[in-house]
Amino acid sequence: VCRHSLPTQEMLKYSKNCEGAEDLQEALTSILGILKAVNDSMHQIAITGYDGNLNELGKLLMQGSFNVWTDHKKGHSKVKDLARFKPMQRHLFLHEKAVLFCKKREENGEGYEKAPSYSYKHSLNMAAVGITENVKGDAKKFEIWYNAREEVYIIQAPTPEVKATWVNEIRKVLT
Image (cartoon, rainbow, N blue to C red):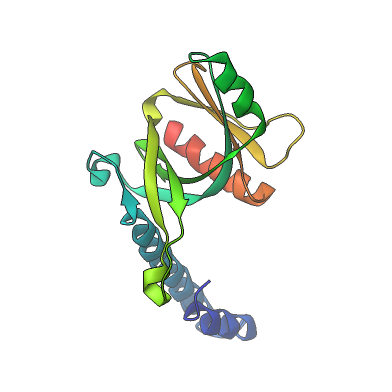
């Protein structure tokens, strides 16, 4: 949460039953909405190596960093064995029409120049995506699969709450 919304949250805390508390809540909600949009688009413009036009993927709904394991039916069995154990760090961008998998690169620099950049790895068209909400033995994991489980991505969120938010947002896109 950025420094501009904190004073508003403080004011809200002390003005629960006062006149104007609802207006304050509305203001805070729209400030947070604007901050999220700015934050999301700052990350989005840092994506390199994507061929198409990101604007054609529809609205950017969420973005965040995850551990990702892959399990593909096609491909070399050695790759599959390796893939099972070691997760990849991936930054996911969930759009209305596609989910992008990127690799985050921290840049050296000061202030704004220290912003991360993301190299595009691959994307899945939401039209062919399925989701499995629960993965055995881990409340932070869920699965995104593609083309009737031809490709399976096990995604581990930093917390069960983050997982729940993503699962709900992906479900909304899929329905």
